[in-house]
Image 1 (cartoon, rainbow, N blue to C red):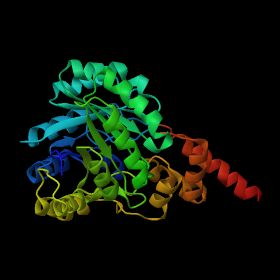
Image 2: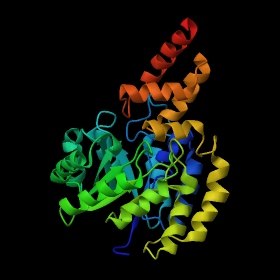
Image 3: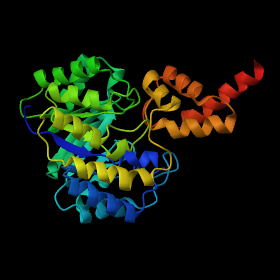
Image 4: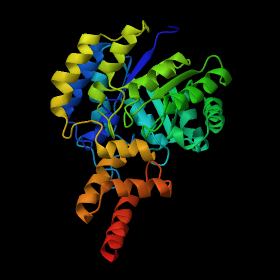
Length: 339
């Protein structure tokens, strides 16, 4: 079916959220070797919130940014190593350093209606000769038509690939189809289209396949779905479905299965699965990385974490506003006390 699909593996970036950014250098090296050997095209390796994300607000990573990137670069024989940058968390200097450490792919991520903040970062990545990607997070939060306008901005800044990003795992298949098909019809023929899914509504693989059917040829996935919320599209599941559908790609099914089962699952601190909290994320459309923060605050203040997520959704919180969670938990605890 169409062009060969490029798999961008996010086990070492989105997967950081699920392990509180605590991968060790040894784990990064081992995972990179296995992912590379399984045939992934790009391996993304940074703090879960991207370059510059290691901080009090987002949580400190176990290893330095330089060590994370260099370890991935040193252990990837065939795959390119990529980094994520959210303007405001990461700055151009972080991007230049990542490039000097050997990163070849730069994904610049903004909220779905704020592409204009990415102009300098996308321009710099393109100037450095990196494979430059625009990454429109929380794509369910705006209409397909508005999303296209934001995508056009990123394209004009120099991004060669633009992603529909389902950060909350809230898109249905029709939602995905509408967004990707509009990109395909209206972006330049040379611009590639990507899709990044989360599995909060159990639609990670289904949405990725719909995206491919509509013309996306870069798809994000992670071993055993390792990622924020209910996790990302699981590589081994996606590969099995792509094989059944004769979709062309570079991955080896048995190797991805074995890496997920033997290496990734034993490293998980908390099973990456659809439980009541991760399902609530998809249902209410809340950023997937809010899960562990809401779980902790719920326990600390004696309130239901689902109520925290629902209130956060009503407030319209976006990625980077995790600090709202404690305030919401305190508010709910007070309301409970006064009831």
